[in-house]
Length: 179
Image 1 (cartoon, rainbow, N blue to C red):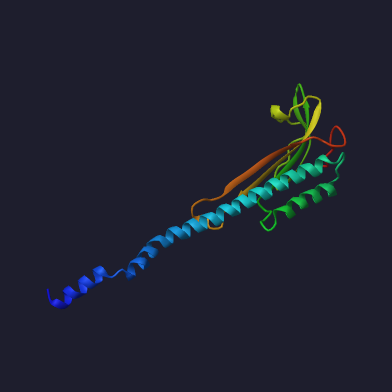
Image 2 (image 1 turned 90 degrees about the horizontal axis):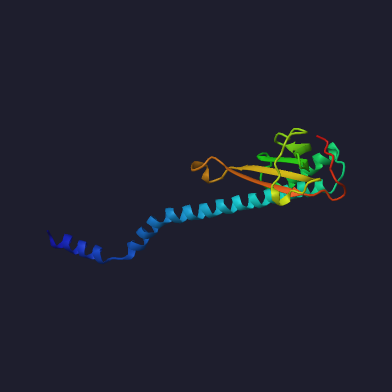
């Protein structure tokens, strides 16, 4: 080995200037993944909060009425769309039902939907014991949203977010829905 090669090898072994650049290059992909995951998680949480607000609002608006006509129902669903902004309302599904609670079982009095199938009038529905009071009616709002991650499409198809709200009619015993 010549003196020149020995000198270069010893110099390179002691030189620490490039070490930081190499370490940064190794850590950068991990940092980018953590950042992208954090952004995606915050988007999913925001959509879930908006879904909860939309579902609660639909149920609350329906529970305030006694007889709701088709135009009012469309306006209520339009309010849910507006709540979901700036996210798309296309994956949003809403089903709002008026349900009679009796000792013989819980029956759907009427049901309206947005981007989903409404429940059939007279069909059975199970109401949880915590909100079940025989001889009353409930407004039950079911919301669902298929969240497709912006960055995470490589890793996952979609995430289904859903929620159910139970509200009592405020001005009467039962609410007549137009659907």
